[in-house]
Image 1 (cartoon, rainbow, N blue to C red):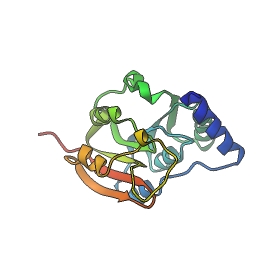
Image 2 (cartoon, helix red, strand yellow):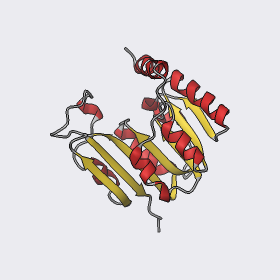
Image 3 (cartoon, helix red, strand yellow):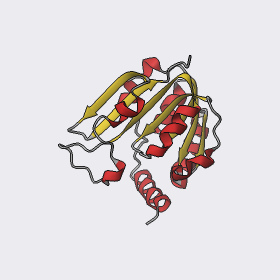
Image 4 (cartoon, rainbow, N blue to C red):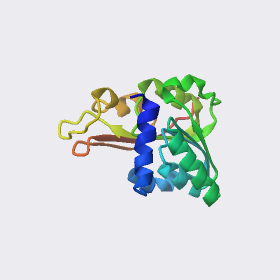
Amino acid sequence: MDAKKKWNEKYKEKLLKSEEPILNVRLQELSNYLNGGTALDLACGLGGNSTFLANLGYRVEAVDISEVAIEYLQLLSDQKQLSIHPRISDLTDWQSLDFLENSFDLVVITYYLDRSIFPLVESILKENGYFFMETFYLSPKSEQKVSSQYKLKSNELLSEFGDWHVLYYEENELEGRQTIFCRKKHKE
């Protein structure tokens, strides 16, 4: 089954169960840092993080491969009059996204991993902009039904973004997740 079909089916099922979009708890806990501006939510799903950010005053670009998720988020955004601009895109072809350098104050990625996208994040984030990422990692104590290719290695996000100003980092072995919240440093 191709990725688009898989995710369309998954989101149809969630909507049939009337499941609300889920906000990432750790992103919510870091809201004191989030002061509005422009945000990019990559692999946004049904838009739990996007709606939260829009309510904080962000103009949100929300990207996902699923037409079901994007149509739902567009409807939700229209109903609640939120500044969210959803669009369908396959992130494995992120070069086609045509984002300008230094154009976002915040980039969010939750439970999506494509390591080749990290340079894009750095280029599109403004100086002193924030990056939040949370996804699965190869935990010795957690048994997730996710392929190892979509799991981070221990401390991988710290290695990748360690020269940024790291404001929050957690590697939770029991839940099998890694989370980082960091600020892009000003280039001198």
